[in-house]
Length: 175
Ligand code: S3P
Image (cartoon, rainbow, N blue to C red; front, side):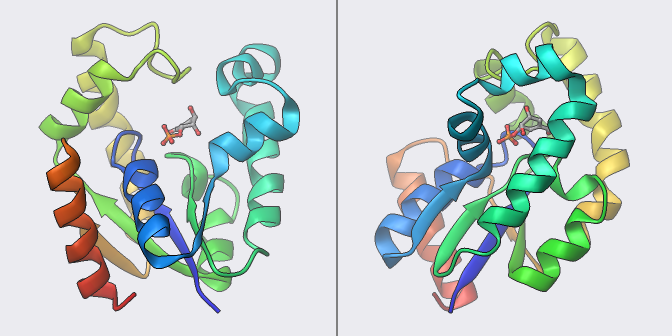
């Protein structure tokens, strides 16, 4: 039974890499944010607006427990998932956690383009996003570093890079 759990900051490529990996390996891809949205019939932005981050984290934990029971899956968690409650310990018990490591500048480039569907970023200027990454990384690194493995995911900018990164990932982890 395979259960791979991708963790990493927003914009680290958990969804991009996970989806392509699943296609190539025949595993089922589950994106936790997407699962939450479908279950609650609401966008992540709406859930944050209605229940605040605290309410979102409770929902996130509860649905994490659901998806981490599924078998033969690649799960893409949310950027904050491993950093709340005992989620990282739980994820490590349930599957193979892999941290996607991406340098600050690359994260910033990606997040500037894709900030609108992320409640923690959507109101921020580019400079504020950069400061946010810096500050959050310091808080979150102790959690991310508890992943069983890590993978450098700085090259996912076009189809060719995604294909190459997926090949590298498969070789590195033997899947
Ligand atoms: C969050 C990351 C998002 C989503 C929510 C909060 C975070 O997921 O769960 O907006 O706290 O880093 P992605 O990492 O998939 O963007």
